Each structure stands twice: as C-alpha cells, then as structure tokens.
Image (tube, rainbow, N blue to C red; front, side, top):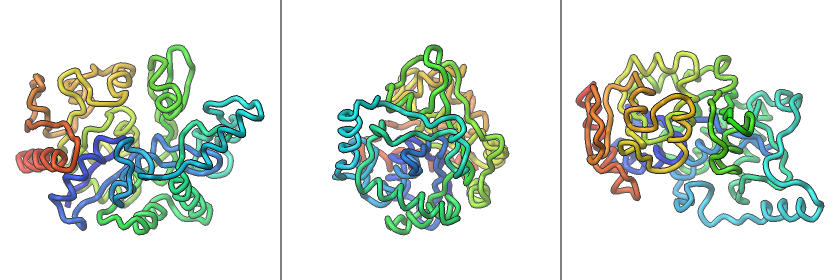
Length: 331
C-alpha cells in the first residue's frame, strides 16, 4: 500500500507513472482542498478534480485543468451578460456574512458567478453541480468524491484531505487578503506575497480514511509546498502522522529554479528559501528526497537522483521508480 499527496499539477503528473508501478487497489491519493472555491453556489475542487479527470482519462493535459475538448458556452455567456449589463468583471466575493452562512464546506471562499473569473467548462460544470447537490443532500465530501470517482472509472482511491473547510488565503503587501484562486487565476501571482493563511485548518480534521492512508508509506510529488501541501500539513495530526511513516518527497525545484507555478514566490513569502533546500526545510518529516540529476543541492537525508522533468507517462514512470527506490532505502 502507498499514499500520494496531491495538489496542483506536479503530483497528478507523477500519478501517470505510479499507476504503472502499483496495483490500483494498493494506491491511494489524498488531494488538497485548500484552494476549493464556491462559485455561483457550486463547489469547485480544482486539485481533487485534476486527479479525478486525469485518472478518468478526460483531463485537458495541455492546461492541466478541466475536461479535454469541453465547451465553454455557459462561461462565455456569463461574461457577455456582465459586459452588456455594465457589471464589473473579475473576482466578486460575497459579503462577509454570506461567507460563513449556509454550507459549512464552502466557508471563506465564496464568489459570485457574475462574469465568472475562473473558466469552467460545460461538462466540468456538471461535476460541480453534482458535487454540490450531493453535499446538499447530506453526503460528506469524501463520499461525494468516491461517487464521482466511480462515475469517471477511477481505479485507485481518491480522498479529499478533509470533509471540513480550509481556505488558502494570500496576504499580500499591496492588495490585502485574497483567496489563492484570485491570486493565481485572476492576478497571475501578483501582488507580492506577505504571508499565507490556511483559514479554518485548526478546526478541521483529516478524515478517518485519510488517517488510515497516512499509515502507509507516503510520496509527496513535485507539488507546491506552500499551497498544495501546506493546507494538509496545517490539519491537526497530519504532520505527526507523516513523522511516523516513511516519506519521500520530489522537489519541484532544480536548485533554485522551479519547474512551474508560483512556488518560488509563495515560499519566499512565508519565509522559506525558494529552492530545493527550502523544500527540505519545509518538509522536516521527509526521510528521503528525489532530486533532479542536475540539482546541486546537498541534503543530509537519503537522496535519489534522476531527470525529474515530467512531460509524459514515461517520464512519470521514471520519477515514480526513483520514489520507489527511495522508499525501499528508508522503509
């Protein structure tokens, strides 16, 4: 049995290789829910859905977001209506009272659907409608994710990190406090990060299914340490569980060069060096690391080296095999 922690695009890419190495019934993926948003009343779980769509072989792998070939007629019409009516576009937060009333699962991350600042495809929207409808019927996010995984034919187990709401909020030097999706999708990683808050984490709990999964050896793929893995580590007992089991982490950096995304800006904003050395500092519980063969970093932990760039399933298998070797060395 093995468990992968997933957020963003790094770990989902690695899962293409993991699926070749491990039987489906021995593979569990715990996905970040800190960057979920409620948009027009519908709960969108980007990191859960990337794994869901990748495992169901429908992911748009050019963008690593949404369903391949999806239409966007509803999204386009929402933008047209807003423009025609003279309504301001961009992220439109609901007011403070609305952020915490009603569905608890969506707290602190509620946006109006006017002009819809995140592009949601039409088939993709059906997933969010189904998810929200099942939550309204009283099902947990874990149970709903299991149902959606069945609908997409997922072979392995996919778990949200918690059934409780956690919101990743970016405190900026110039723009106040904004949700991660506004920071990344609407503002393209601007303005500069002053700090990152995982609001609600102290009151959230890993589910029993997640606790059971963390008893197994764990692989942290090349995901963003701050906003993809950070919300999980903020949950009570999560990091302690990692300290008690073998953990291998793949660096999303080569030295001080990041492969993709805003990991460097976010790490610097929370006080870590934006580099592989900074990732090692952020993961004191990791027993071993998989580093790129050209990464000059020396770590006082077991290291396996390979070409860590993942541009397809064969690359993913190569990196997954390096993770497996590292686990064998520290288990």
